[in-house]
Picture (cartoon, rainbow over the protein chains, first blue to last red):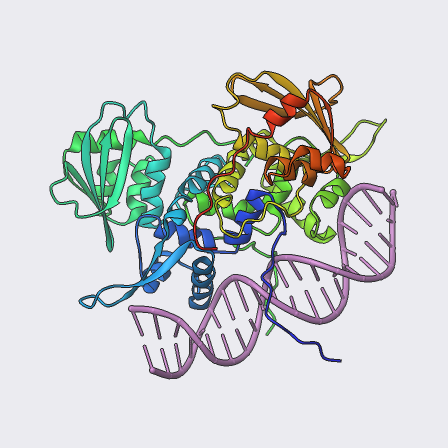
Length: 227
Length: 227
DNA sequence: CGGCATCCGGGAAGATACTG
DNA sequence: CAGTATCTTCCCGGATGCCG
């Protein structure tokens, strides 16, 4: 006997709990990381793929479809000069940022967390927004540029907070140039700037004292015992 | 040619990003909901199963193993009079609560969120901690009891916040008795108390005016457009 | 009853190759 | 560049059965 296959009903927790519904929307593998990569602005398919090492093209396609139909992102065609397709979070999609902050803050205490693994430029920029020590940054006012591979960002320190946007770092008080992992090594791995510069992993231009100070603004929480 | 199968290495994002590591720890299906069910105190295997409709015994076993080896929960043998095994979050496990709050707050705006689906007692109690309007609750001071199926809780309203613990509601200013979905209908579904009482879905004992006021303390955020 | 092992079917994820 | 197509592998969910 053969039954009608019908339309595939996506697996759901069927639970009124908000967290459960969130998992229905973004609980599939890679979904949240796709959102993370779009958190600082739209990207195209190939860039998403490059920034999510390990994702395969078909899974990325499925996630983009799912997130689009959930209203979390939209696909947009850039005007003719560029004429490429990009994916962009909806306003509600951008509101997911606190989820990443809480996930990251919590997991940073994990005994098995290894900050020396590869890291995308986006992750590092978002981690600054999450981990900044507002007391230490209280009286700092500066503009800091980041050239991390294909992507460039500008960070503005003011009133104990840091704003980060994509943009041209030219003219910043300080500019870091290098792969995201090198800057992460300096900020989170305790590797001295001089060492990273000596081996050519990181370039620092502009206010060196500011650079040294910047590195201290993002303390990691204490790990929990028993690895 | 046959290769040694070896120990299965669990799939990982291999990403230094804290959020990605969090997903390595709790990103598998059901893992976060297991944690949610333990958020207000230890439970045994069978109660977890009952409170997570749809989970299968073997998946629950796997999740408990995984969460235990990640240091998120421990299994503990109760002393002889009871002599049952229970699962309890570690202190670090309890620190995951803000993750649920952000997930829930964000997903509550989803066009596809349906607050009338089934709901566990734990979810409802946690949602109160998440959704309370601190301004509205500012000058309320009261003790509220909840008898929701097998489980009972006591909530203490004070200084604009609500504390919720498992415990005996006897002597509270107000006691709700019924299935979690009935109370959820009153708080989030806008169903009048009188209607729920009339059909026997919910029992309200004690201060009725307090009950009516209590129901208004947890406004849902505005949904995003385009369902 | 509480917990775990085992087998099985279906579907999601991963790897690779290919196309407009 | 932006995705399909195909194949394989693994995970999830259900059922059953064992053992304390």
